[in-house]
Image 1 (cartoon, helix red, strand yellow):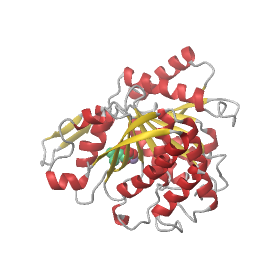
Image 2 (cartoon, protein in one colour):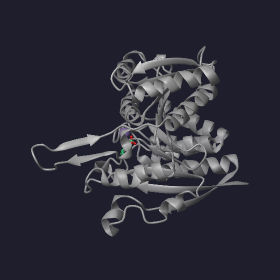
Image 3 (cartoon, helix red, strand yellow):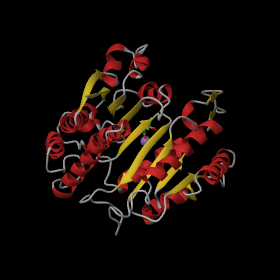
Image 4 (tube, protein in one colour):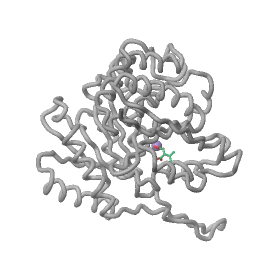
Length: 361
Ligand code: IPM
Ligand code: MN
């Protein structure tokens, strides 16, 4: 029997509660589809940092790299200054495991309310391939003449051709396999590059050149579009049906996927995968730790369940992944009153149970 080693990291706030539900559904899928999961729990996060002063112990990343995949709840603690855990834990894991893709589907599930007027699951159905290893995230910059009236702050967006090419390649390959034509819901598979070539002429100029070069050479079957990032925000609201696979840099990808998440029903459902296609990937709900709801059993675990679903898909458990997807859709369509915390009409663990039952069925 195929056995997967899964690192489970509940993290902060409501992270552990939603992770328990994702694991519940994963176990139901394992039993149903005949694979085994060997879990190792890690207690990294704000509480441990407060207790020990240590964010990621030495050797932790090497240890994580021995897993087949990692399931993460949420990182972020109200008592800890912003930036410490984010940089010291989440970004460090992404960088050290070279999870250079952040895959974020924007899909409206049936029965879920969207703030977009006259749009439904057919219109809101695309993915964002967010480059996850470079850009303004890598710490280039600093302060000069600190605490004087002439203080200077810089923070530099840096991209290498290598980083851009590997992200583009992932996006094109993804479009070929999972684009709208590949899924039988459209006439073409399309990759849209999201940039800002009118101002960030160096960085997005390079992205654009690389995009067309690679597309023309290796992916002539895939349609190429280009959007400025500001206009992208507009179209994400006005005409999301134009999109299939979007690819962009780290910062733009961060920003537009929060907007995307709201259009798909909010943070309760939005999942992402930090993917190293040649290594160990880490899957997480994108919504954060929601500390004010901690321990109340009112947070929506579907984002964590969907993150776990992406994990199984990435590991190659396609049948299990499809079944979980169908189970989640059935629960959103027929059970939940709302996806928002406290308003689901069910507890966190009820929702996990309902999905697990449907997967086992
Ligand atoms: C995300 C988050 C992180 C990011 C933060 C917590 C560092 O906003 O995963 O989107 O900016 O990547
Ligand atoms: Mn974000």
